[in-house]
Length: 188
Ligand code: IMP
Ligand code: MG
Image 1: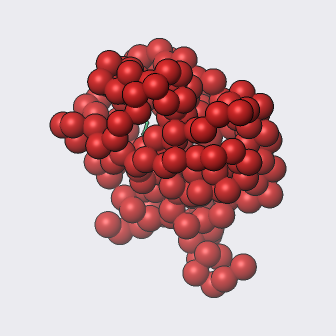
Image 2: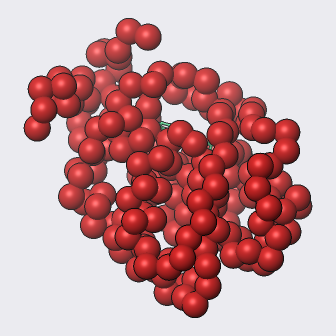
């Protein structure tokens, strides 16, 4: 392990999911998705930036033709609580008419982000099918219910970082997922 990663790890309260556990589950999810979309081409819409690492590993493990689209969405604005507002482009930058779409995010938390994006894609892009995948789903009351087809791990309602997920831009490149130590938050 590099010195930089070891330093960052020491500011975590604890590791929740280690790299090997994540990689194994992501490979299993890839098999489930391959089965469900067999014979077709997959159009992936991934929410940036948190899902970046998850999507990179997942898609390289899926043995199907894939087209990848990204959508930058934000609801946290650097803190550890959702602001309740979802910000994204005025016009969705892709054509998904008649496509088989898989919408991917890192975490299902309040549900606002995925519910908002999912409804916009259905209304504006008219895909043939639309399924949803998340790496993590927090056990908590949702503000919006979202039908999710693939869930990597169910976790408690705690703020997590690593494997793409950040706190004020920090921690994204950790290979594992951990819980922050509130006493040792990085200076922004
Ligand atoms: P929702 O709209 O509340 O479901 O929030 C989803 C978004 O909030 C995700 O796409 C994440 O980017 C972010 N988020 C939610 N929980 C966490 C967390 O524990 N760590 C880092 N980002 C989070
Ligand atoms: Mg996000």
